[in-house]
Image 1 (cartoon, one colour):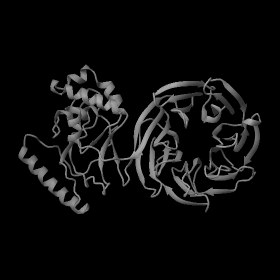
Image 2 (cartoon, helix red, strand yellow; image 1 turned 180 degrees about the vertical axis):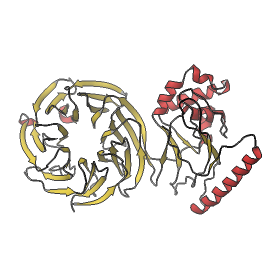
Image 3 (tube, one colour; image 1 turned 30 degrees about the vertical axis):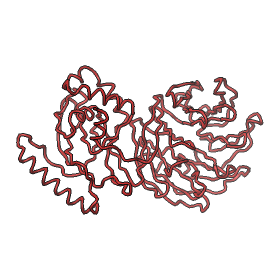
Image 4 (cartoon, helix red, strand yellow; image 1 turned 60 degrees about the horizontal axis):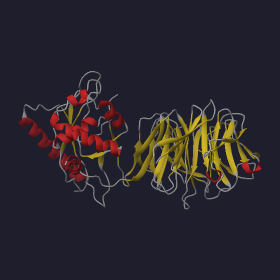
Length: 492
């Protein structure tokens, strides 16, 4: 598969370096043309850095192929009052794998000895940071089969050569007005993740897995600290109950199980539904949990009453995929169903308060906005759409399009004006919750995204994928250092 490379400028034929006059003339005319066009586009706000010649080639099965050249031009520079059109490259998680895999004698032998010190320093810096950003840079791809290295022609010298030869996977990110981005913090490899939850007081992440296990990870030490062998079927949901020192899980054997997360002992278990259990929510003030199931029902259970069934909510005509409690009024909750609807319920009432219709296919996920000024719900469905609902007016106020497969999880971030949506297309999209513009698309190459969890007083988000659990930091992008400044810090 060819890597995705985003370029601006002229797409020309390979330059013959034996004809320098032609090269110089070509570059001069091209830069002049791009400069004039860009000047009018940006109203005179031109980037004041260097023009660079971008050289890249695609990985092939046996040898280097398809060498081409592109002129790169940033159409606007970074200013405090003009935070827009910043073009940069973000090195993905695969960079760390590439560095580990190819830091061997064969790879080092292809690099001249004078580059070795720069190579080691840059490798250490990238591994320590776990992510890297480079501005106005070359994207140089080498053949991952035979480790061929392309002759380098650049203005940043040997350090730039080694940095970008090591960085074999670049993904272009479009930075919009507020420049929100997701930066990888840590990754835990596992079987397919079905649910994640974040402990509000401890640095813990609860992860429930398709293989029937549940794990608790410490995201400070990046260690697996507790493992629960729940059952032999998928554990689709799990939650912390902090005031009881519990985790509660539900699985495809229709059982709810309760464990003390300090002693790892099972406190209780009971059969809760007649079909797969999809979701659990813990009531924030009462001694209750809500569960929903493929049996099309939602049930309320009270642990202070020996886990008695207090109420059953019926009305959906297909699987109930997820439930969410309204944090602004915890007597209300919403449910998402494959019957194409979202229903809003009142505890104590046997009928749904109202039904929201608008998705063309099944609805997989639903969540409430935590902002007091926004009586909003967000939902995602098999129609590949994310919808924003005003539950006071009972109307859909916005539809967000962009995913190419089923949307499996959605969330309003509790601290940032961001809506997150995860999909079976492998991407997580960040949407601005005021403008509803797409801020960024994240693809870490970990398979389908199944679950998202965020926490108050934190900019972090935890994502669950086919291949494991990822914690990212969401933040406004700050001005990054120039390539020359970056190299001065690394090489000197």
